[in-house]
Image 1 (spheres, rainbow, N blue to C red):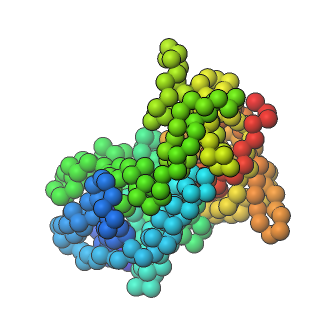
Image 2: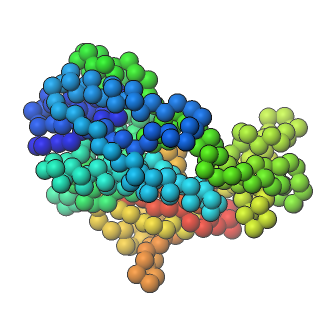
Image 3: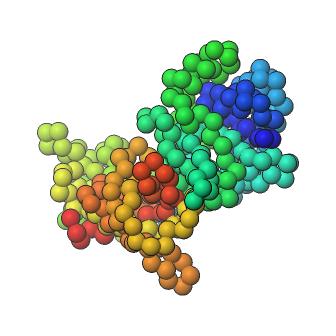
Length: 365
């Protein structure tokens, strides 16, 4: 196959590329240049060194290498989505949208225009071809690194053009292969931060673009306990950074609601029965499937956030005015279901798709 390997400058994408070369494919490496920190946001934005590392690995492997400038598209499709989401009071997920809109959106389209059959990444996920389903996405073999959650919003044509060469490996095996091949990135630490922006805290990123809007922090009864710096800087379930001591032994305040109309941040002591913190039911919007549409009620497993355990739930879809939504009913109460966040849907190891949390119902604990 003629494959475009998306090389981020990290060890995972380096080994993914190396495995494809070893398998005899025609491989070209590409770095997606999405962000260069023109706003001087606090934090480390290592795009230049990442390009150097990715190019060095490509040279070691003897393959061509390109830098694909997608900064304009990134701002339009990811940064705009991120900022508009936080400003409207929800909590978006830029990493999931980066995969759908950029890696397997703009980059995949560019690759196909250049004659490539697929785009390969260093995700810990697996792609298989099932007779009844066609191309499917399965959880990665390493349970501690599985990244299928971030692929939940991919559509069937994107899955068909995706390859995940390291999905059958453990992280330790990936490191071992990188050292065996002498790749420059073998000892490079994993990056943490916003997709393709770098070691930048979300709070610092938001404060660069969205002005602070202070308001009261209140308890469930409306009593003022402190002052927040802007609702967009907090998310449901957050415990750190509230600057409101509980004065109770081993019990802390947690964010349970945001009230934009009054610019109020609502907090409560976290317990197993804390109101507005736990829920069994919610409404899903923006349903996206990796394969066949989910148009009938069924039992499945749901991941409400990355690294959360998959929870059994009943998925009940409804079509109205040509758009599908669904009610998701969990068997057990879930903590801090957050409007705007991504809910990944599974049947065992099979990633069925994903959706966006809309309304959360607190009436049935």
